[in-house]
Image (cartoon, rainbow, N blue to C red):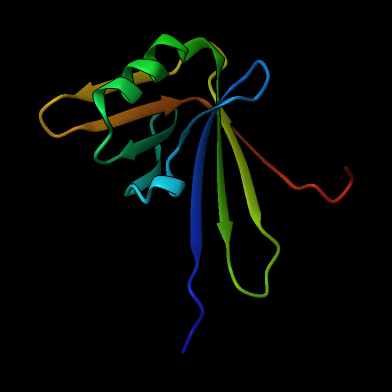
Length: 111
């Protein structure tokens, strides 16, 4: 049996690093993909209050995407927007879409 790849998505406030939305901790389905001008994150089944929290803090969002594969170092990515991320929310489908223009790979080896 092959071990499972785990993907995590954390959305934090840039000042103080307060967790705004731990997507993986709530077992929400999400997808990260390249798009024109950057990266697009689609998150399923987001509560309206959470979407509003993200929108009201849009200028201070830091998004972290981690991929854990057995026997491999954790792949860490920091996603952000140099100006203001595009955030849309659909009340009917409860889907939140965030688009950012910047992504940086990093690790904690020299911390």
